[in-house]
Amino acid sequence: MTSETFRLTLACRNRPGIVAAFSDYLFRQGCNIRESRQYDDASGDGRFYARVVFDGVDRPIDPDGIAAGFAPVAESFGMEWAIRPERRPRRVMILASKFDHCLVDLLYRRRIGELQMDVTAIVANHGPETYAGIDFDGAPFHHLPVTRETKAAQEEKLLALIEATGTELVVLARYMQVLSDDLTRRLAQRCINIHHSFLPGFKGAKPYHQAFERGVKLIGATAHYVTADLDEGPIIEQDVERISHADDPESLIRKGRDIERRVLARAVRYHIEDRVFVNGAKTVVFAD
Ligand SMILES: Nc1nc2c(c(=O)[nH]1)N[C@@H](CN(C=O)c1ccc(C(=O)N[C@@H](CCC(=O)O)C(=O)O)cc1)CN2
Image 1 (cartoon, rainbow, N blue to C red):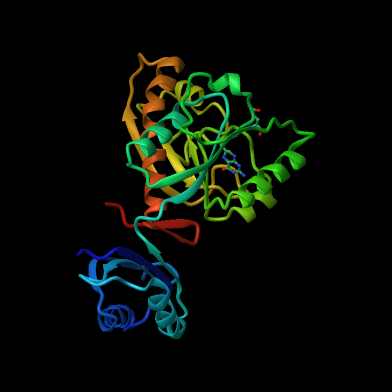
Image 2 (image 1 turned 45 degrees about the horizontal axis):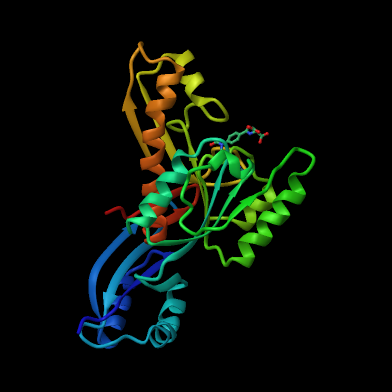
């Protein structure tokens, strides 16, 4: 009989004995460490990060008991930590605007089991006619139109929906509205945006036109956590593709769609698999 697997994630000020402490604790609980990744940010503010996958070998694990026993160990190191069952799907809300390529891609990857998530809702500032023909796979659709004048009220409805659905992660899948400072604070480290450029280049709207005018030879996309500062949040994933003088804005937009899809899907997967740690204005990513 195989035991269920769990993930321990932790972050704390670096000092000797952290690895010994959590590995000895898990060993004494009869657990087996299947995978362990760690990073000691000696160059920055001396933080230590670890992601540990463990199971009970051939005996069932009591996660609450394991967590209760680990709490004093964690406290002695001043850790931020969590223990989660690997197979529990994360609750994810997807926001979209006019362009649906990232929305469709995330739904497909969920349907084939690549993304271990339950979609709590699909929210858009455009009406359902914009997404005609898309199989939402049972996810509820909410049309929340917004103007400069109605932004505060729209965001209140959005936040109420996030809380009512127990949403753990909000994904801006080419959602083209700037979120307020208050909303970004409430969604800190649990709201991922896909920006259609290789940041820090070409921030803001219309990055492909900016790229065309500049005559760059590479275009890219960037997935980052959303902060109040537009396109400035901690970067989770990026990718690029070579282009040429022959590419006009339309062909850049076409080539960009593929890059956006794969970069956002990777960033969402890394987040829901607890592979991403925010380290100040940057991230530590234990990619697979
Ligand atoms: N607080 C933040 N909100 C959002 C971010 C962010 O980094 N911080 N990223 C954007 C996505 N985005 C670029 O990736 C982006 C979206 C929209 C705009 C913009 O200027 N929008 C205009 C309205 C445009 C329209 O109605 O079509 C606006 O909001 O006034 C710039 C960049 C998502 N939100």
